[in-house]
Image (tube, rainbow, N blue to C red; front, side, top):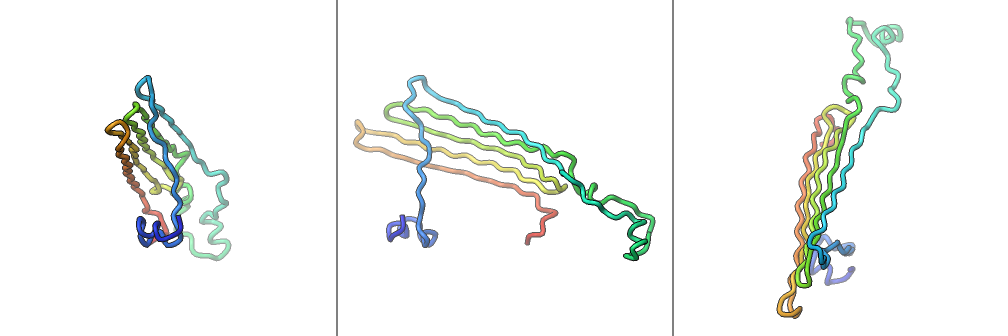
Length: 157
């Protein structure tokens, strides 16, 4: 939509137009309810560790004094193969006069750098109901989303 009707519905957010994408809805299932689960587990790893100077190299190249410390700070700041996971649960059901489609998502992503991670939670319900032999209907869509991000090592503001 790219006209006055888009502006009337979506306000200033519709200045460049609005793209409407239909979402899934429940179906008339004779057997009742359909449930689907999808899970994903992933691992991350550093492919190639950078070549970092030790304290001896630091003094040889004249970059500073050796204070007796030889810590590999790169290894101290990087997780060793962090595990991330995502889960999605879809529930669909309906009859001739009612339909419901629900999605629940949860995810936990661990970053390679210690102190970098993200947790996501979201849910969505699409429902529709018909009344008076299909002469009236009500359709509702509701969504919830929450993201928690640990940004202790972020360069952002």
